[in-house]
Each structure stands twice: as C-alpha cells, then as structure tokens.
Amino acid sequence: MRHAVLAVAVIAVALFAGCGSGGDKPQLTVFGATSLKTAFTNYGDSFEGADVRYSFAGSDELAAQIRQGSMPDVYAAANTKLPLQLYAKKLVDRPVVFAANRLVLAVPARSSKVNSVSDLTKPGVTIAIGSASVPIGSYTRQVLARLGPAQSKAVLKNVKSEEPDVGGIVGKLTQGAVDAGFVYVTDVKAAKGGLTAIPLPPKLQPVVQYGVAVVHGTSHEKQAQAFIAGLTSGEGRQDLLRAGFAAPGG
Amino acid sequence: MTGSRWFAGALVAALALTILFLTLPVLAIFVNTSPGDLLSSLGDQASIDALRLSLETSLIALALILAIGTPAAYLLGTREFRGRALLTTLIELPLVVPPAVAGIGLLAALGPRGVIGDPLNLHLVLETAGVVVALIFVASPFYVRQAQAAFESLDPSLVEASRTLGVGEARTFLRIAIPTAAPGLAAGAALAWGRALGEFGATLMFAGSLRGVTQTAPLAIFERFATDFPAALALSAVLVAVSGALLLGIKLLSGPGPFARAHARSN
Image (cartoon, rainbow over all chains, first blue to last red; front, side, top):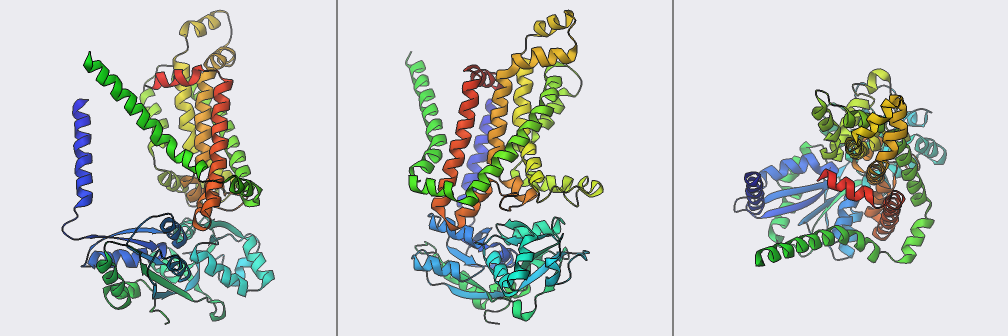
C-alpha cells in the first residue's frame, strides 16, 4: 500500500514537472474555434517560436472563458464579432481577419434523404444546427432568414438539436443521428469522406470571416504576434488553405 | 502524547480543507447571484423548460433504476456465486468512465448506426427517451452499488426466519428485505438522482440539445455560459438548490442512519 502511494506521488510529481518544462521553448496557449482544429494542429506542429497548446471549443464558449478571467495568449474565432467584442472590453488587442470559410449543407456519406436546401422543409427530415450564440449557429440563422419566413419556419421545425459547437453537428451527422446539418466546408473536408457537402446557392451564402487577436496582457507577446503573422502570411496560411479555408476577402 | 495531538490536528486540518474546497464553488454561485437574477431566471421560459425536463427525465430514469436495480442488487447482495465480483466491477464501470466516453459508447451501442440501435431501428438519439437512457447509464451504478451493500448487510437470520415461516422468496424480498434495507436504498436513490440531475456530457453527445425536448438544466446552463454569465449562475443556483433539497429531503425522510451507515460500509 505504502509503495503504491509512493509510486502515485512520484508519477504525479513527474507529470507536474513535465508540464512546466517542454524543452526550452516558451509555451503558447491558443484558444481556437472548433473548425480550426485540423489547420491549427498542423500549424502548431511546425511553429518554431513556441510549444503551442490548444483549447478548441465554440468561439462563444472561449470568449466567455476569457471574459471570466481565463488568460490564453491568442484567441481565434470563427467570426469577427466576438474578437471585436473582447477588444471593446480591452480583453484582447485589435483583432485581424486571417481566413474565410464557406457554409455548406452537410449530409452523411451514402445518404440520399437530403439533396438540396429545399429538402430541409420536408416533414420527417432531421437537422442539427449550432446554437444561436456560436458562430456556426448565427451564420445558419442568416441562411435561414434569407429563405423567407415560411421556409425558414419549416426548416426550424425539423431541427432536432442545437449543438454548442460545429464539432457536435459533425458528430451527429457522422453517427447518422440526423439527416443534414449546416457546417463549414472545412468540416466536410476534415471528416475524410464521412460527410458529403451540398453547396449553398450564392444568394444564401453568408460572409464567414475568422478573426484572431493577441490576448491583452499576455506574457508571450512576441510569440503570439509571430503565431498570428504565420496565419496571415506564413506556414499557418498554407495549413489553412490545405484545410480548405480561403484567404480573407477571397 | 504530542504525536497523537499532532495527528488529531492533521485530521482536523484535512477535514477543514476538504469542506472548504467542496463548498466554495457552490457557495460562490450563491454569493455571485443577485436575488433579481435568480427571479428573472425563474421567470425565463427557457429555464423553466430546462428545469422541468431535468426533473421529468431524472424521475423517469430513477423509477426505472429502482424497478430493475433493486432486484438486481438483491441477487448480487444476497447470493454467493462465481463471477459475482466481476459483475459488481462491471456495474461500477460507468462510475469511472468519462461522460464523453459514455456518450460515444451509447451512440456506438444504441445510436442509429450502433450495434443494437441499427438492427432494432431504435429512435433514442435526439429524443427525450435518449436523455433518460443517458441518465440511467451514468446514474444507476450509484444506486445499485449502494443497494447491494444494503442487502449484503441484512441479517441473514431475518431472511432465514421469514423463509422457515413459509413466506415465499418474492414476498420475503418485498416484505422483509426491502423495508429493512430501505435507508440504504434511499441513500443510493438520492445519489443516483443527484447524478442524473447533473448529467451533461453523455446527454449532449447522445441526446443532443433542443429546448423542451433534450435540453436539460445543465445543458441550458452551458448554453447560457457563452452569452449571459449571470443567467448561467442564476440557473446553476436553482439547480443546486433543487438537488440540495432532494438530498436533504431524502436524508430527513430516511432518518439519520443511511448516510452514516452507507458511508461506514463503503469505507
């Protein structure tokens, strides 16, 4: 028994010690929108300036954590509104737009129940969308608003789940829990064949721009700036393009 | 002499630290919630829907846990058979499984593409019934474990006497075993109910989140956290109050014994 306790204590101490010293590089903590996971993880592996540690979640949840005093070094959101709100409260520095994305209607691969946006109004079709506060949810509501009140209402009637982030929508789709969901085109790419994307008609497509900012008062200002610079012009930009993002404004 | 005093002091310090650590987050919820926020949260229809759904689903889950868990625990607690320890461990497994893993597991088993869900064409995912299933999965071990311990500690001569008097097995179970073990069963039920009320991860993954259908109070709190921290705090306060009242109510109803006894047994 005593040996077991000792062993656990030794392991715990070793783990804690390991946390502090990840080589001589500083550690950069990045809060990123769920949809950035693939691109950011690849970018983090090649980023020279620091050991990057990520926390991925809905942009709104991450913003709420920062408002409650959480202190990452970088905040990257799936819209520009949330970083600007935090900037207005002096919680982050001035945000920059670093990527653009597109909304698509995603269906499980090998599913033929939904083939177009208009199929979403059919009775019995099940849909997952983002909750109103997460960017994917607010973009989706923009799309629905452009369908007109009658169609929009019929679609909302078929919504079976309002997920806290886009990962939840992808999960419900790949598990076949719903017939369709609004996600980013990058999510379909990241699902590696598990999902099929149905493009939205241009008149329904909202403008999807991603904003990133250095968190105010970070002790890794230089590394955070370098991380963001890489996103707008360096290795990070390449990882974003490979994941299916577009250059901002493009 | 000084040694034992030093030890007693260490025990008190450890208890004080434990109590402080466990109550501080709960107290902070109430300290940070103004009565106005609390009232407006109670007046908010979405919060009421979430609380009602939480109460309904947790009560249905609890009823099913009691109905099936009690005889199952009786068998485990009163019979010696090969593999009993293994079965007990299997029942305890959900206690140590992370909620996200529970959600994935439920999807893989009972989801539309799950090993059972697919051939049986089950419609649990994104339905209120799915919430109940998730709650039962995470909460039932709390009850079954406690109920098994309660049945194990029954005086065997009591059950024996009942049988020699010609009372059938089923009647002995219903008339003797359950009433005698009632305090322990009640303590287990309270823990299971509390766990069900607080369930979050498995529910979100398996049942999703839709107001009035699958959005229980913890899911509603999570959603509010992103937009309205005071509202999230207020709803948290309500949930803590409800859960606390349930625990206290059952504790008072079943006398001072069950918790002390149940805890003494599990130690």
